[in-house]
Image (cartoon, rainbow, N blue to C red; front, side, top):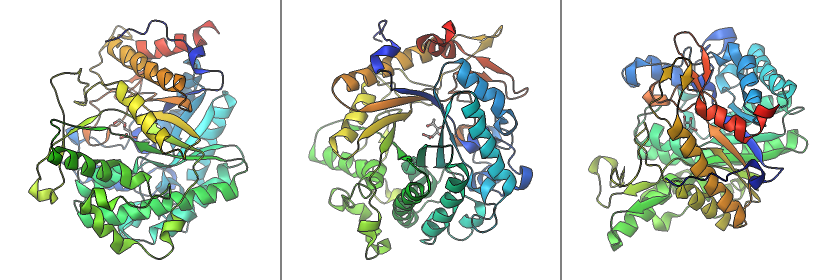
Length: 452
Ligand code: GCO
């Protein structure tokens, strides 16, 4: 692995934002505290058998009660910004209608805790924890959800908009639509092409509605959204390989990006998605457009695409990992730092996004807490090598304005439970003790915070 010993904060410029990220269900716990309604992840986790080790987010990192000391850590490590998400059912227990004042108060306190410590709050409005009450009405497959989402965004923007400038509407639509609605191993556990297509169109409309509400409600709002970017490769270069790659690229990437950019649905490159037309109405092509201030690029891995159909998924070629040539993380993901450059370059090539921000990048490795230390050298190398790719992108004129580590601390990794540890800070889930890992100390030094 290339050792980028000369990497310096100054290489990224004075205006560059350095942050850490986490999400409501993954860290908050307090799943039913103070009037919160259940989310689809509460229902999925309590349903049993679908999460490694039977884990739930009931307690998670107990961020709900520890947000102040956790935000102290953000400051201590030298970061400028904290990306967190807002739990829709904490704010609106039934999804619409009745507001839960205690839920809104919590996010109010989180924002203030950031500001008091000189940390910019970067909330995401939807990081997958839909109110179960709305799932019971069809969830993302029901077009009414665009209006439900509008109501929710309005409530949050009115409350936090006097102090929060930087907003993300969604986190990775691909992940919850493909994994939750097509493959079925994330909440709500649905396995249906139709639901995936309907949900995708409604999420794309909700992106635009959310952005409009933020612009109308928050003065000087900096409005973006986040997307996982998964570059696709193939084993060979036959016509069949190329078609498989193009098709999966649509299903996992372009279908979530291009309608908002005014480019429509790339049906020609993936006839499998033609059924999405059933859910489109007159005026939607206009309504779905958004002029993003920024797009958050989230990069973890490339995928290798198989070129033969899998009957149960009606011909969708599944990605496959190539375990032979690259270092592998605890998630089974290949470490390929140049894929981050490729992801940034690809978004830049659309020519429609003024600013890109890496809103997630990071890795899980088998960490060991020994005598109060976690020597996670592999994670340090991972960050150095990926940051070197960000620097290369900047050098090539790609407008990257920030970088957020996934994650501040070890947390609930969805269907994988608590085994994969992504944090810069180790969490003992029995005692809730936090221990800064060597990677956290590395950032502290890199960001110049250890001198203060
Ligand atoms: C996602 C989410 C995070 C994950 C992270 C590691 O990309 O899946 O935004 O919630 O925890 O990516 O898998």
